[in-house]
Image (tube, rainbow, N blue to C red):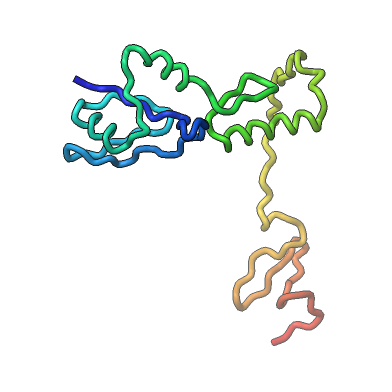
Length: 170
């Protein structure tokens, strides 16, 4: 047989409801580790469930009478957005969601909300390819030459050294 256990979202202490922060992580029993997060319900073997109930008094055993109530509580979300239908249990996720609404409020209401978005009917693609000009083909750039002979530009004038020089050094 198996027993279902529920780790409640809220604990009753002194007549007050306080949020439960006690997840059961790594409960060792029968040579194995068992986990049960807050607001989660799982079936455990009888021996494990009895040990968990004994050691973790805040856990609730789920039976025929309270299973529907537990399922409803699990479905309830802690944070609900007042602008849309977004619901979540995590505060950070809720805060990130609310930033979207802040941006909407700053930009004003979206009066174009029901207008269809435009999309391109065709993507432009160039019809001809440009020829790549090699550095040797550009006018005025020296062509040829070796370590001991000067480079010559398109007009046949020799280039010497790093810049223009009037005298040829021997």
